[in-house]
Every structure is written in structure tokens, then in C-alpha cells.
Length: 544
Image 1 (cartoon, helix red, strand yellow):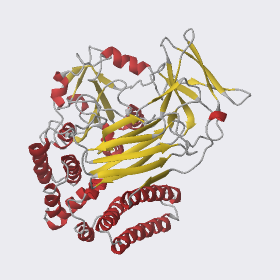
Image 2 (cartoon, rainbow, N blue to C red):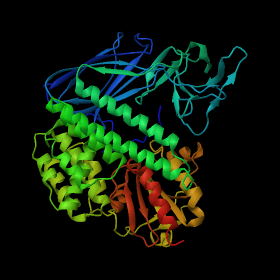
Image 3 (cartoon, rainbow, N blue to C red):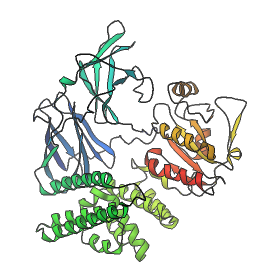
Image 4 (cartoon, rainbow, N blue to C red):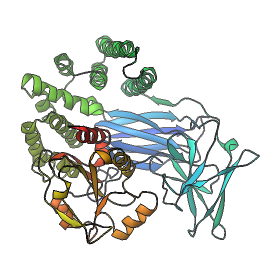
């Protein structure tokens, strides 16, 4: 189980996209374990632009068959008990079957095991508090006693794998947790269950992930994914501390590697005889350069060699959007944008393109084009599943739009009803307005870290629990998230008297305000995690 944020009400990243009646293509294949045999339990999730198309348990033999309704790029996540989830892209550009065989690698457990603990339905699967520690026995097994009034105990282990919770070895059955891992299920006796973990029952660590398609294009996309992962790992390992004597040499070496890969992909495109493979290599060359380098006008020439209607653009649609914004900025033309929007690309891909394009123009503070393409989105795709997010992020007329003054407000505090929280009281401070729901906002850890670090420098946080009652919020804070800042008292769950003041329609959501009361950033926190942390730091340190 990974730490994941869920946006409730109108937006749900895991919602299902409505689909036409007839499939365009059929995705078929198998998923097996590292030993080549079917797994105790395996699952497959198929996504398009973050929306789940299919999430299903596989058959006993590990086979699957998923109808795909349109062309473009999909992302597959194949998972199995005791194994690492495989994630890889799939491009559909023609009708018919798309066949793939997947062999998973076993989990890479921490060696030696020094500390294990349990989380589960007995503590709300809380990573941060009320874990139950396990004790190591002389025989090498680990055990712990769980008390529960529930009919079954659902649990996972912490400490077996770096940075995540996974299934143990004692289970009557396994349940998929929806995020690539599995939950063990056992039945307690007289309200107690003794959980035993035996490392000897796990498959031997190791093995390599294998993903094999029956077509060259998808195998090339798979290879690019592997290349990118290897480069990122190598760059992290090779990068010296900032300011050290080896920094410039290492940076020059990485820059040379970036140029080499870019040139190599262009050379592959020139050597390829199949036009679609030529498009594939050119598109990946552009994605590589835009990921690790800087855009320039030379990339526009390469981009125009790949037709705007090519389904391959949808594999890295953000790259095409970035090139479109670059074309507009450097040449004042929008030919790439116009070509994509007038092409036969599926509506879902055009929505994702517009979202990425708006993000680029917003970053460039180009309000003219933000308004133009936001209006285009409302005209053509206002009913799409992404509408809620795009309206929250890019409506420059919203009350919480970047650059506007924070709306006036006055609310009683949750902890002391005789006290009030007002916008005026926040002047002179950097403030985060935090709209949340108990159990559905795992970025509270990040906020607590920011508050501890910058409180002395004038950072203030005000939380509005719009997705739960006051008692639910109080209970959540008792269980390890004290959130030692101001909390507004909300009368009702999803109280429109609060939400309408700020134009907030769901949770989690944040609004960052500078010392003069001007909004610096706003949006759903799972989109803004890294950028938001940098914005907070810059705002707090400004003028110091």
C-alpha cells in the first residue's frame, strides 16, 4: 500500500471512464510470478490519463482480456502477491488484439530484517501511529497479537520493504488493496489473532521483470521506460553534493549522456523503415530531451515530423503540450496546437492535452492563453471526468485564482468557540488554507513538517474539515495527527457556506497566501506536492 491521496466529491482519480459499446482493440495476456508460474492472486489495472479503465483480478492461470475502446496510450499495472508491481505503457493505434506476457519480480525485502510492525483495520491502516510491533523469535519468525472486535483481521507489514506496506505470510485469503499490494485476512478467535510472519515462506528475492509484446512499437516504449528508470537511478547515485568539487564534472557527464540518448533516438528514426516506428523514435527523442533538457526551437522541427494525429503523442502528451507552448512563446504561432485539436485524436486525449497545455501557460503566467484554452475546454469538454480538476486549477476568475486577494472570512475556531479566525488576522503571515477530510488526506504529514520548520518564520495554517464532522476531525487528530495549528469550526459536512466563500468544491485542497493576502497557489494537493513545498519555502523566506 502506498501513501496516496484521494480527492472526494466530484473528482476521483480512480473513477471509471464511460465507454462506447464496441471495443476498438482487445488487450490479452498473462501475468506470472518470478518462477514462471501463476500466482496465488494477481491483479491488472488499466488506466488512461490517470482514470481507471479496468481493475480486475486475474484468472487462476494468470490470463486476462480487456477491451479497449479507443486509440491512444494506456498504462498497465500488473501486480501479484509477494511480487513487485510492473508498470508499463501500451499504445493502441489499430484495431485488433494487443498481446503481452508479463513475468513479475519478487519483492526486494530489507536485509537484515531489524524491525517489523503491523497496520490494519484495527488501526485504520495508519502508517504513522498505533502500529503494532512484532517480536522476533529464536526460529526466525516474527509474531504479534492483535485484538479486534471485527469478524476478520485485515493487516499488512511495515518494515519488510522500503517505504511501503506489503502482505505477510499468514493469511486465510488475500485482498487486493487497489494500489499494487495485498492485504492478509485472518479470523480472530475470542477477539484475538496471533499474527506470525515467516520469512522462509517468501519466494527467493531476485529475478528480473519481463514484459514482452508481440509488436515492435510497444516493446520500444517498454525499453524507453526502462532506460529512463535506469538513467534516473544512475543520476541520483552519481550526483555529488551541491558545491562539491566533482559537481561540475558530474553535471557535464550527465548532460553528455542526455545528448547521446537524444541523438541515438533520432538516428534510430532515420534508420527505421516502418513509418510508425519512425514516429515512435522521434517522439521518444523529444520526450527524453524535454524531460532532462530544455526546450528549444530545434525540437519544433522534429515535432512537425510526427503527425499531430499520431496516437503515439498520447504516450507523453505533456511533451506535445510543452512543445505547443514553446512554439507559441518563440514564434507566436499555434500551428501544433491547432493541428492536434483538429485531428481525430479521441476526446479523452484532447482533454488531457488541454489540461497539460493550460499547465504550461499557467506556469509562464500567460493569462491570455490560459483564458483562451480554458474557454475552449468549457466549450467542448465541460462534461468530461477531468472537468472538476480543470475548473479548480485554471479558472482565472475563481475566488481562489492565483494573483487574487484572499476572500474575506470569519469563522469560529474548532478548539475554542469563543475565538475567531479571520483573513485580517493572517495579514503579515504566510498562510495555508487547508480543506480536508479525515482519512482522505495523507499529505497532512507534509503540512506538519512545513509547520514545524517555518512556524517561527511566520507560517500559519488554517484547516477546514469540510469532509467530516467535528468529532471525526477530533478523533483523527487524537490518533497521531495533532495538527497543532488553527482549525475552523464547520457546521455541516460539505458546508456550502464555507466552500462557496473560497470556490472550493472538494477535498483535499489548499490555498497558499502571501503576507499581503495575495493568493500564490491553489489546487488539489496531490498535484502540487513538490511544487507546493517549494512555493511555501520561497514565500516564507521572501524578504528575510
